Image (cartoon, rainbow, N blue to C red; front, top):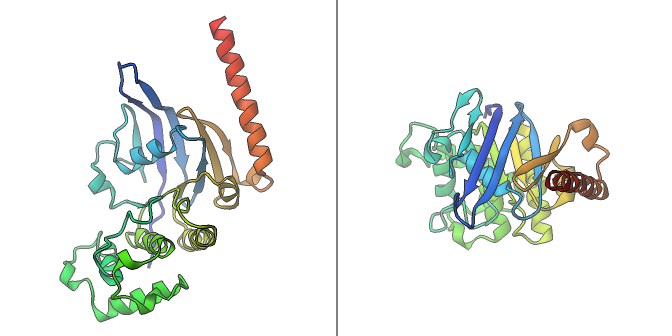
Amino acid sequence: MERVKAMLQLNQIHKIFNEGTPDEKIAIDHVNLTLKPGDFVTVIGSNGAGKSTLMNIISGVLVPDVGDIHIDGKNVTGMSEYKRSKMIGRVFQDPMAGTAPSMTIEENLAMAYSRNKTRTFKKGVTKKRRDYFREVLESLHLGLENRLSAKVGLLSGGERQALSLLMATFTEPAILLLDEHTAALDPSRAELITNLTREIVGKYQLTTLMVTHNMQQAIDLGNRLIMMDKGQIILEVDAENKKDLTIEGLLEEFKRIRGVQMASDRAVLS
């Protein structure tokens, strides 16, 4: 199956929550970000840095107060989440999200596969398609190809997350968003999903943005890395410099940048 490569552009994205109240918070502070076709960008930052808000703005869950979003040159800023979902695949942190637990593996795959196609659900589970589902499920090495009639709600967290990752690519997304998709899993399952991510993104050259709290994972995966803090992108690391990146180096860079910012703030206030 041929996948569509695309480019994501965020121009001056700004988002404030509870504006004009004592609880006002600048969640995203005039962020600019461009993903070239096939880029795999990992995003790190502490809680409240704006990572999830950024993902929600890209996917259409939230609308920016200022700025615009372009996917493959098309302005999607005012497009609904539903319509935008045809261009965006997303895997969430919660293994229970992204699938229909009361439906079978086969039915979930059929829905995902047909999302961007003018086909009815009744035509969704043909013999040819069932054979294809078995084929792609075999690549997960979890034995799910022999459990097509099993309810998804009965799968383990790792199995569901692997299925969610597979389903997200069935839509032939222009952009793939991975929102801490290994954080809720035990170490062995997290490693499995990490390896599957590397394999699937690499195989189809999907333009991907992945949020993670795992700094080693952020270093190991992808060709670019960005660090967020207080709604801003404070560090960008390209493919060449990423090769020699370490956790210690990232922490030192964060301390250095925050130190410069604090000194600048003090200078303004003095």
